Length: 129
Image (cartoon, rainbow, N blue to C red; front, side):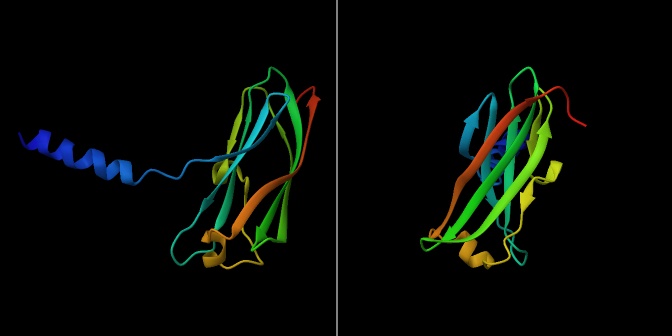
């Protein structure tokens, strides 16, 4: 009975700890890019990228995300990387994240902050280094 009670209490608590979902930004040639914010108390906000290559070949990716606040673009984040076939690069795990320098954590968490895909170029490569 105690185990059942523990499970009934633990499942909703674990569901509340789930990280926010990634927001799809764009897709081309089998490569998709998504982003999400990571707001931790007392730390700067981090914009995490998730890059997925579902194609059967390596891809060279050149992507730029525009960060705007109250309708004005304040920063642009760029990434130029190669992703092997069938691989996923996910946020801090693979070093694909940005820390805004022009916005405070409160501004980044505000609904007045927008992230848009500015540039998204994908080219096939023989392999990644």
